[in-house]
Amino acid sequence: MSNDWYSDFVNSGFGKAIAGQVGLPPVPQLRRYEPGQPLLSGPALLGTATADGRVAKVVRSLLTDLGIEVHDDPNAAVGGGSSSSKVAAGIIDATGLSGPADLAEVQAFLTPVMRRIGPSGRILVIGDVPAEATSPAVRAARRALEGLVRSAGKEARYGATVNLVHVADDAVGADLESTLRFFLSSRSAFVHGQRLDVGTVPGFSGSSQGVDWDRPLAGRTAVVTGAARGIGATVASTLRRDGATVICVDVPSAGDALARTANDIGGSALQLDITADHAPATLLDHAQRHGGLDIVVHNAGITRDKLLANQDRDRWNSVIDVNLNAQLAINDALLGSEVFHRGGRIVTVSSMAGIAGNRGQTSYGASKAGVIGMVDATAPLLVEKDATINAVAPGFIETAMTKAMPVGTREAGRRLSSMTQGGLPVDVAETIAWFAQGASYAVNGQVLRVDGQNFLGA
Ligand SMILES: NC(=O)c1ccc[n+]([C@@H]2O[C@H](COP(=O)([O-])OP(=O)(O)OC[C@H]3O[C@@H](n4cnc5c(N)ncnc54)[C@H](O)[C@@H]3O)[C@@H](O)[C@H]2O)c1
Image 1: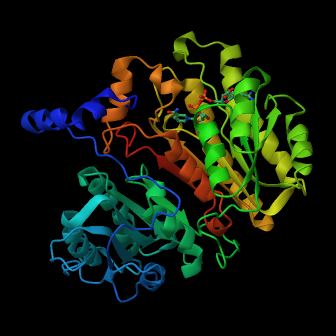
Image 2 (image 1 turned 180 degrees about the vertical axis):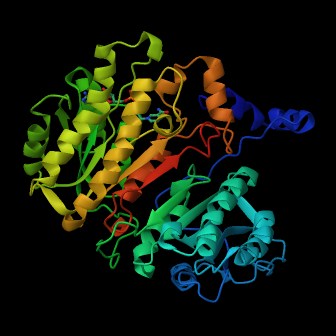
């Protein structure tokens, strides 16, 4: 049994029959990542919109190297079946568009793909970065892909996702590998209807050669703030699963839960209020004893919800201090310290409230939007260290926090999304773990929503 009674009901034998008869919206069961799972559970369709497409080759070699059956024709018979058999993925290389007329090729490929995509399948559109085009027609065509993807996301069913990846002119095949693996795998189960840019902060460098994709964080040391419970505890265990040694940080009053998280994953516990003046120095001191730091996850966050009309300075400041000022202070210390290694990764947790706003959450929304500004400005500063900073913006995630919401708000949060359900902490954690990989070196300054394409502020 989950927290979600409606999902449990419509997925039960009796509930399924009733739901079908009266037209209740289904709640697909999402395929989630388990170690050893193949990247795709079946054949893939791979299209190119123009002769100038520059990424299909790298996608093809990634898939064929993994033994995945790949077809160029979206109407091909697959897997020994027919031309209507289900596929696990449909990927279109839509780079090189010269104007809106080329979009018809994208449509021609995606139309059969939408009919054939299997449960929890992956539809991925790969395009050029609109801002890199000076011609209005080219830029229009590139930008059009986003509207297409976001709309197709609202049509996809059975837990299939539709996402868009922009590849900057500076990025080449290998720079894309970790991103392709993330979006095609079930690590991205709740990332839907979104866009991510690769290679847009100039000067990046790194390599994905020799990566152990089952343990991509092996040998790395990570700090996770707010790790005693909720999303932070799951982030800590996910980073551990992927090979990292994890330093779990939380306030002293959460000491028992913090010790449990750390013990469960063979990590260390550091009781620390991240808003304390000494917090950055204490964190770095502790990390130095572990041989330095590769990954910092700013997950700790609080809400002190009040309508703006009833707001007071103390509440306001407490939210800004924990959710924003503490991160800025720690990042400053990281930038100036050798303890934070070359190739380091900073990942921060924003929120849908920081993008769309939320009634009663002016302080929280401000802090989480501030986090996005921090990411924008910090990304170029990290390039000389071959380091990156990115943010994940969760939507409705099933945690103690959302369990305590009034039932109406909770049901709206779950159902008003393309996936008709809330995400799980692991969905946020998988995204963070992917940002944290060494092979994600070309992904910098990004904000990725993990929200099942929530309609609130979509
Ligand atoms: N749950 C959701 O649906 C959701 C949605 C969007 C964003 N988020 C964000 O995800 C993050 C984790 O959320 P959660 O739901 O797991 O929250 P949570 O309240 O369960 O956990 C937050 C943790 O942060 C710790 N913390 C708070 N202040 C701290 C401080 N000063 N120093 C050190 N640790 C501190 C808390 O003790 C707690 O263990 C937060 O940043 C939150 O804003 C959550």
